[in-house]
Length: 235
Ligand code: ATP
Image (cartoon, rainbow, N blue to C red; front, top):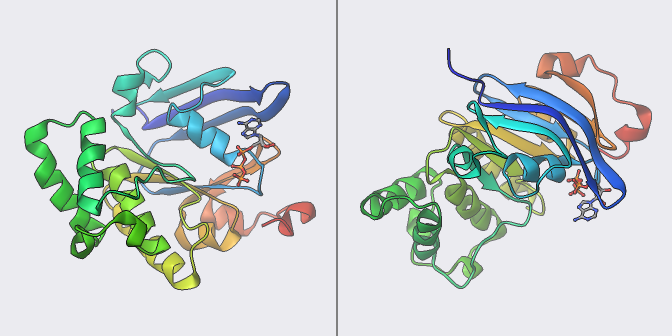
């Protein structure tokens, strides 16, 4: 049997003296869309940055396809695609130039890059903008480029930190539709502070409050969960 895609064990992190997350545990064993739901400051980005190897945790382990991220970061990161909250777009490049750059940063073999860029632009419906500077794209299309760079190396799972944040209602619907499409081929973990977003997209939900996981279950189970009153206003 294949190793779980991701196992997070007893994960805790503090920035100087303040604990941002405490004893977080979860396992991602199957495909689908997993949602990390929590109010601002709950600890979502901290968890995502640790899983993607951007922040080193204070305690606990992240195991990706059986590889301990702390021991073999390069091998483990091959399985991950990441769209951080502040997408690392180089806005003075065209879409195509930027994706070639990302493929090189991923150390993809040079002879595979052209085809991979073509394929990922088609998947994210940005081919018609390939010669356009990223700075001249709408927020929704910039987010498509961000998603394209996250899946260009065909990772097992894709981590999207607040992927619809700052978009207008139409762009939100379009980006959600794209996330559903990419979830046909990649397991997706996304974070959000918007209740309707997890309801619209996710098969499994983890709810985080002040660094603690307070709920883990399917969307159906979440429908029967009574969200604590103080959080209802924050979501
Ligand atoms: P948001 O939706 O606002 O990004 P979040 O759920 O992603 O919130 P985190 O960004 O993980 O939450 O922050 C969790 C806690 O850690 C917060 O109290 C935040 O102020 C703190 N924090 C996050 N990054 C740092 C940092 N670099 N230095 C110090 N404290 C930090």
